[in-house]
Amino acid sequence: AMFGYMNSINIPMVMEDTTALLAYADTQKAANTQIVGTVGYCMSGRYAINAATHFPDRVKAAASIYGTHLATDQPDSPHLAGQKTRAELYFACAETDIYAPQEIIDKVTEGVKGANAEVEVYPDTHHGFAFPKRPVYHRDAAERHWERLLALYRRNLKK
Image 1 (cartoon, rainbow, N blue to C red):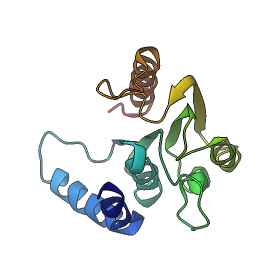
Image 2 (cartoon, one colour):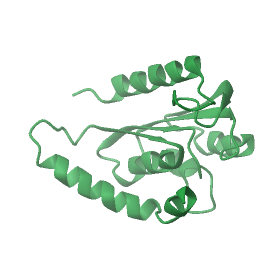
Image 3 (spheres, rainbow, N blue to C red):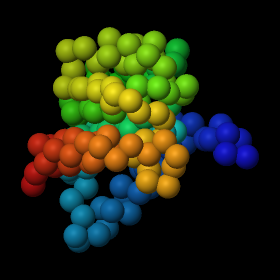
């Protein structure tokens, strides 16, 4: 069932929803929608990265944590995002991940060369390492990913 739901949406659909979310945030006094950070885990990693290409004047930092579908043959493939945005991008990858094996990580690394981006492989980890309720939870890697994500936001999301 999970894969059916995952496959029923795509980047254009999620960017349409993101447009609506940003429009709603624009109506909120407490929100500063000109300085946006995004983060996605697993299937939503590709959407967080693509938000930086679709909303380049707003999204200043985007992170994918053990994202999936990071290097495809589509023009909106996340591995091409570094050439389409000024946002700082961060890809946290598990060392062992059937959804993002080393050859995909290599394509992402190559694709973001020269961009304001980092691809980091977390040693001794598996897909899902940041969630405490999962059998593959890796405490040190989970803590490191929070440190990296918060540092990314501190660098880029200042008023």
